[in-house]
Image (cartoon, rainbow, N blue to C red; front, side, top):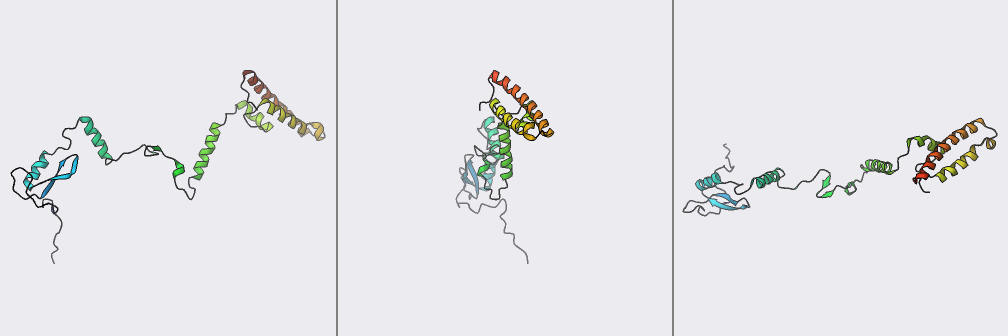
Length: 201
């Protein structure tokens, strides 16, 4: 059994042709082929016979009358099918907001928490390197005022004084370390008080 080819051939008349005469002046042939009227009216057509549609297509110039800049802009638009595109990481003209993403399994939660931690750390004042160990010794956090250091020192001195620990040598050594830390912090903060930089409590 021979199978019939029912595909529409390239040069067959358009099955949607309106059944009228060719639009070329003076032509009485049947109009079976469409051609766009202009680049701004691509869905509006002339209807021609095969001979005249070939002539029309040979003369067709989509870019006729456009400047070089207009042609360049049109070519760029054609790359994205004449649809606007935006910078990666943004939606339309608005910046991308991760909070707008539906995340029922909290997949993004860990990264949010990490970014929040980094923001907090970057916002916190940087501890001067010489004060890191003295602050740890006295259990204080930066920034700190001279009054806070003095109050903390009094509490630690009372706790670790040898008389309060039955002459315990380890308490005495601990108190020496606290004295050194206190002296370092007091010297640093006292110089800042003179220059007006001390944190106000």
